[in-house]
Image (cartoon, rainbow, N blue to C red; front, side, top):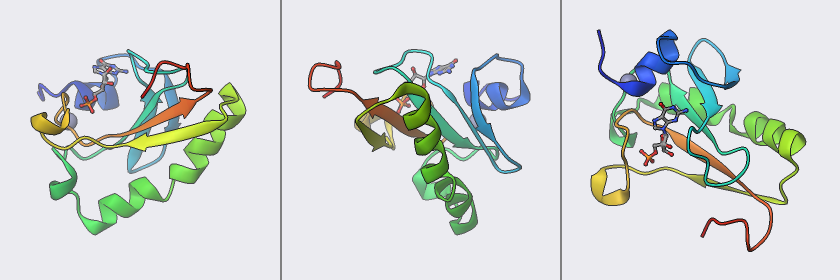
Length: 113
Ligand code: 5GP
Ligand code: ZN
């Protein structure tokens, strides 16, 4: 069985708050949100980082980015949104299953820089 936290989230052995799911990707709330509504999207196939993603996997992820951003905008009412992706420990990656962060932004004092 995989030791990857995000693979366990996909197989349901670790619970998560789902935002979106299809055959290829899963999106869920970050457990330690940087701002209200902080969400992650991941490929269902375990891929460590952006260098391991096929074009098809990247396409499957990025084609639902506008939809998820819209859901977060409607649900939480941010006035802006950062998309963020960390690759490798020096870049801040702490879970080694590719993920893209959606960080809704509210104002200059919402705690995220
Ligand atoms: P990274 O630093 O790798 O770019 O981001 C990893 C993110 O995964 C962090 O924001 C962290 O809070 C989140 N995270 C780590 N473990 C879990 C978990 O078990 N559940 C959820 N929902 N998020 C997690
Ligand atoms: Zn994984």
